[in-house]
Length: 298
Ligand SMILES: [Zn+2]
Ligand SMILES: [Zn+2]
Image: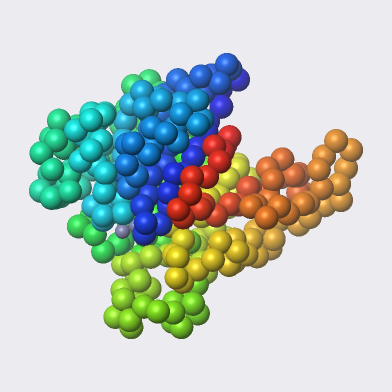
């Protein structure tokens, strides 16, 4: 059976970079995509090797927006790796003039059309949607991997209907859970920066993330990953707990039955496979900021 796997290399203002791939029965990677380039090719190569993977295992890149933490190494990828870099036309124009992406971006530039695009022919399709954020333009992506539906929305000032409708159909959602409002208001950031973060064009708070989750959780949803957690204004525990409170309201625990694990809570999330009221509770997991996550089997 084919499996879909996902790994985060870094997530947050320090850098953002994610791998997503389709694996065959022998665990060989058949098709892969890299999302955002806030992690150097050198470090990526090393981390992929730990998973038995190589740079050749992804043949497309997607970029969400032109903030430094998402494109810091894009110039290096274009210079040395030269895989197609897919973005909507607005973002492609911004990247073409960005000092970080440099002279090599035009070789890799690919523009996404509205609707589904074949970014790895016959295997991975992508569709973009605009999200409010204070970059020149910012996008979330819905991906289809052999029919498996994956949605990522990071750096999103507030939820918007299109993001919500993709999330409502997804098998896996990666969503920002950036800050705890109390921590932000009492933290080290100047007032003007605080207002930027929570003003609707900055980042999504834990509560906003949890409220979004309340709306998009559906029986087919298998995994929720919380991304882009703030170092100063959040903790993984707070982000997890805020969303988990909502999941608890949506799913009622049932007694363990034969062959089924009961409702159990691990530090990093609810293990998938626990059956609650005949439905699987989705795995909920905050992604580490500075260190690579495990390779998740979705
Ligand atoms: Zn960011
Ligand atoms: Zn950003």
